[in-house]
Image (tube, rainbow, N blue to C red):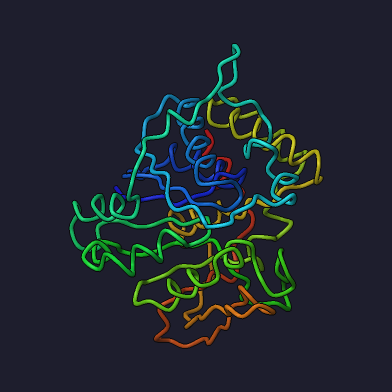
Length: 307
C-alpha cells in the first residue's frame, strides 16, 4: 500500500481529492495545511470536518501561514465562505466546529520531518495541492527527512500558455503565484516531481457540471453524497467546476491514463511574471509533466473512487 502525506488548502477541489484518498488504497500518514484557498487554520478545520463526516481519523498538522495572508474575494466566490462550498459540513444539529479541535504545533515543519523520518528511504509519497510553502521549508531545513520522500505529486503551474493561461495572471496559476519562491525551490530541487498544470486540469471534459453532479449523487455512498454536497453550490454558481487537485491524486493512483514529458522547470519570482513556469523539456528532467489525459478514464476514476 502506498504511504502518502497530503499537503492541502481545503478548498472544494482539495476536499474532493481528500474524500477520494480516504476511499482509496493508500495509507495517509498525515495531512498538513498551508495558507492558500483558505487560511492554514481553516484548512486544518476543513480537513477534520471531512474526516469526521466520513468517520475517519488522520493526523492533521496546521502548517505555515504566509505573512500578510489575506483570503481573496475570488477564493470566497469559488470555494464559499467556509471553503467547502458553504455546504454546512459538520454543522448538523447546530454543532459548531472550533479551532480548538486543531492540534497546536510550535514547529509544524519539524513535526512533518519527524513523521517522514520514521519511514525508510523513499517510502512516503507527497501529494501537494496547495502553495508549496511547507514543502520548500521541509526540503531546505530537513535533508534527512527529505530522503524518505519517493516522489512529490503537485497540482500547480501552467506549462503551456498557448493551451491555457494562468488563473491569477495570464502567466500564473494560483498555487505557484501565491508562493512563487517556494514553487521554484521545490521544482528546481533534486526531488522527483510529477506535475499537473492548468492546461490539463482546466479541461472542460474532465469537469463537474449539473449532469455529472447528479451522477455523483446517484452513487449514494457516504463519500459520493459528501462530495456532491460540497460541489453543489460551486457548480450552480459557475455552471461547471474544475477538479484541479484531483488530477494529482489520479496521476499517483492511475498513471497509465496520463501522457507525461520530462522537463526541468524553474518558476519566475519577479513582480511582473510571478509564478510563471519556465520549462525546458529534456530526458534528464526531474519533473514529469502530465500534458494529456484520457478524459473518459479520468471520469471513471472519479466515479469509481466515490463508490
